[in-house]
Every structure is written in structure tokens, then in C-alpha cells.
Amino acid sequence: MGVPILTIDGPSGAGKGTVSRLIAQKLGWHYLDSGAIYRALAIAITERAIPLDDIDAIVNAAEDMDLVFECDAKRHITLDGHDISHLLGLESTGNTASKIAAIPEIRAELLHKQQHYKQLPGLVADGRDMGTVIFPEAQYKVFLTASALTRAKRRYKQLKEKGIDANLSKITADIQERDQRDSEREFSPLIPAKDAVYIDSSDLSIEHVVEEVLSLVR
Ligand code: DC
Image 1: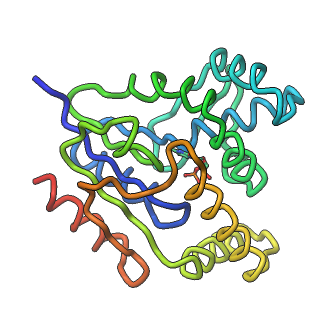
Image 2: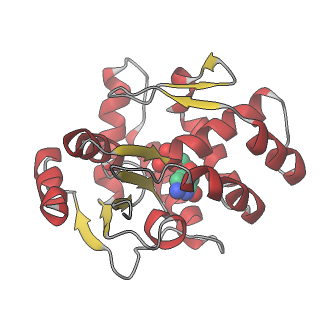
């Protein structure tokens, strides 16, 4: 029997993580947070002081890293036995992740690690190229997006709630720069799969998006 797969691709801040986790919980399926894999690799190379142009060393770090995802509502992850959850969401981690994600050798190394998550009773896979490259065979595909300003405002609110000083125009500019890098890279760029359902969450609640996506699967 085939493993049912739902892919949810889109830019950072569109609500993919929250929506994907909730849907995986409701369906009782596994959840792949592929962005966290790129982020964990970014943390690993920063800790080891590996420069961004040393591709062999980054590929080796990707091969060696031992990542464990805890099953809870937030991103809670250990890398080689130590908790890196507090570093995952940092802007600097996201920026380094986006840079290493443009390197084809690194994407190739991470391909099988991600495909490993395809297991019964089903998988919700969240990322940029889940429906186009990693699981092109998926039965259900969604491209979830929102305007750059909406995503920046969500991020700003999150940071403020954590008591972190934030500047909305700087966040908007960073988001636009990251979108551009992720969308224009030569390998596995952020583009909707041809057979994906396109959802713009700018004016939708999380509950609404979850219902819309669940209606595709049911
Ligand atoms: O979803 P996220 O913000 O945690 O992802 C961090 C970076 O990782 C993002 O800027 C691009 C990269 N990424 C990717 O290239 N492919 C994926 N499937 C997931 C993330």
C-alpha cells in the first residue's frame, strides 16, 4: 500500500509550520519540518566554524549530523545530543539556512534524509520543494503563501511577544531578500508544483486554512 503524502510548500511566515503540525496531528500522520533540517545544518556549521564556501565540509556535516525531532507543538530539536531549539528560530540561522540551501551538493545530500520520513500511516511534508522535488508523487499538494508585509507583521508580533526588539521595515526587507534568494536559485527554487492548490493566507485565519487543506485530503 502506498504512503499518502500531503506537501505544503511556500515562503517563511505563510503559516506552513502551524498548519502542517495541526493537520499532521488531526490525521495522525508523520510530520517533516524540512526547514528545520536546513536550519540545524546552519547551526552545525556555525558551531564548527565551517565557512559557507567549504562545500565538502558542509556536505560532511550534513552527512554526520544526528537530528532528533521531539513530537510537540513547537520546533523542539536536538543536534548530536544537545538541544538547539532556542537557536532554530533566529534570523541569523534562517539566513545561513537560506544560503546553504542554494548549494546543489547540499540539497542532494539532504534529499534521502527527507525521503526517509515517508512512512505509514502518512506524511505531511512542509518546505519549499516538497511537492516539486522531494515527493513529486504526493497525492495532495498545497502552495501556501501570504504577502511579504503580512508575513513581516506576523514575525514582528512574534518577536515583540518574546520581548525581542524588532523593526518592521527591516524584517520586511529581510523577508523580501530571502524570498528572492529562495525563488531565484537555480536548484529546487521555491515555486508551486504544477498540481498544487494555491492558498493565499494573508486574510485567512489558521483554522480556515487548516479546514481548507483538510478538505483536500478527506
Ligand atoms: O521554512 P524555514 O524558514 O525554516 O526554512 C529555512 C530556509 O531553509 C529557507 O530560507 C530556505 C531553506 N529551505 C529550503 O531551501 N528547502 C526546504 N524544503 C526547506 C527550507
